[in-house]
Amino acid sequence: MTRPGLLRIGELSRRSGVSPELLRAWERRYQLLHPARSQGGLRLYSLEDLDRVRVMQQHLARGLAAAEAAAIATEPPAASGTETLLDGAKDELAGALAAFDEPRADAVLDSLLATATIDTVLATVVMPYLDDLGKRWKRGDASIAQEHAATAMLRGRLLGLARGWGRGLGPRIVLACAPGEQHDLGLIAFGLALRARGWRVVYLGADTPLTSVADAARACDAAFVVVSAVTPKPFRAHRDELRTLARKQRLCLGGAGAAEAALDSYIEILSGDLVDEAERMTALVDGR
Ligand code: B12
Image (cartoon, rainbow, N blue to C red):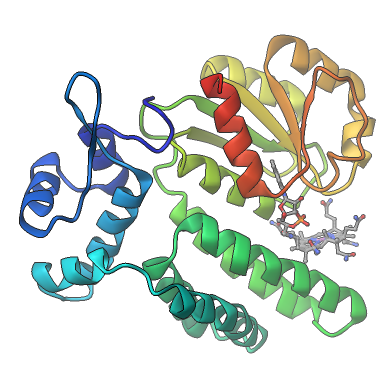
């Protein structure tokens, strides 16, 4: 991997699914990309370049001509407009999901993803929405059916965005929920934030036995393993197995339960906001 956020043309092509030839043409014709130069003179592209390519693709898929799509993709975001869009989007998403209106919820997410990065969409809309949903569910203001339908829909969308997160050349990370743990949305979102920073994700999902986590990490030569849980209970119940795993792999514990788990000091705890923690892990593996 090059520096986080700096990609060679091949990696930009793999991540966006656009051929290097077409990327160069878009750079030349529409100034869509603004590469920096490495010491050896190689072009290095930023995550903002990748975002612009994705916005361009979304508008092409909607039938716009290339010049029109490029004009939108290269427009500087109007800060206040974006903020207003994000503010309104959480309420709109909540309204659509509460009414079991999947097409409307999809449309809200589509328009958000066309204008904001995945980090922003996760941190300002999806995660706060899930937090509110949990509070409403606890108060009895959201039914079990509404909670199940909403989380199933969001989980599907997040996993859709995750397609191809195992590809590329970055370091590999194995993500798994602790044994007995069903809450995997935070872990998927964390994987997406890592993916945006060049990691390759091997996702094992809910309720994974720790011996299987160890097998997978060994088989794919993972740089890191993250085990997550919403409460400290599974971490405490599997303390010895976690210690064994930590002797073989670089292990981190994540999710709301990690902060209270109080295990050994050599097991890294990721207890902050998931985008910040993805940034911190990237710095760790880069030796920054
Ligand atoms: C959706 C949901 C479910 C779904 C999960 C679907 C899925 N595939 O994930 C289902 C229906 C399966 C479910 C089941 C249960 N749930 Co539930 N669930 C929720 C709900 C509404 C949203 C969870 C969620 O995804 N939140 C979004 C995440 C991302 O937010 P977060 O967990 O606060 O995480 C923050 C950080 O910790 C960080 N983060 C999260 N994960 C990770 C991972 C890493 C690596 C990192 C770095 C950071 C990170 O990101 C977040 C934002 O900063 C919450 C309410 C809530 N407030 O969260 C309840 C909640 C988590 N559930 C709860 C409970 C009690 C249960 C059940 C026991 C209910 C039951 N009686 O059956 C079962 C347990 C199942 C099990 N064995 O795990 C409680 C937990 C209370 C507690 N602390 O003990 C909550 C808080 C609801 C409540 N207010 O009571 N649940």
